[in-house]
Image: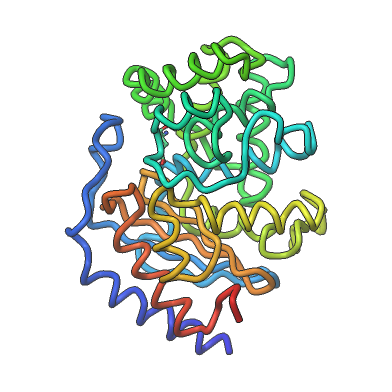
Length: 309
Ligand code: GLU
């Protein structure tokens, strides 16, 4: 079985490598534009602690929107179902930073994985505390889930994102205007920019996602991170909303819940089986890693992993 998985990873990586150079590196955050577009990494974490890695799996990259999964878990832990008064659970069919829908839907973002929804989720996670304390909580959570204290925030990326963050600030002000923000805009986006700027490798990220593959329980520490029903629901949201207006295509091709980030990372959850992280900075038009999605598609197909089994 393990040998088969190794073989599937090698094959998926060869097929994905043929697509390097086809995507575009995100350049609207200047610090991200510097990344080598030919990087390609893959890590598979299994519940027994085994990790299979390939390519650039040990190089840290900016996790960007993959962080939204983890802040969603933390916010649900902190405020429970009341989170759903601030944010919905429907796919958006819109770009990640779209402002149009927010206006017609009175400041309540469609879901926690588009930028507006993630900003609203971070606002709820703050829950009256200072921004620095919350950014530290998120970082410590990522370190604990990755089982690695070396996970850091890349402050150059955070600064670059803040300096070019007019659009995200607009989303936050818009929600504030509809009374859907409980803290000052700068406090909320200050945490949001830092969570997006966390740098992790595929190895660390795959390990960090394991609790979502195992009904909310981290199989390596034994901790129940979120209740089982919440883990299932986070996976449902990833499946339907994890790739913005490309979510249907990803579900069709890969058949597993996933979340992409404009740094080129994708975290993919195979419930009961394991957690996979891929990284390749060239993005498709919706902002999902192009070669990364190809690697996941081939791996999931060959391994027979799908939530539709
Ligand atoms: N930090 C990015 C932004 O807010 C996240 C977008 C993404 O990774 O999809 O624009």
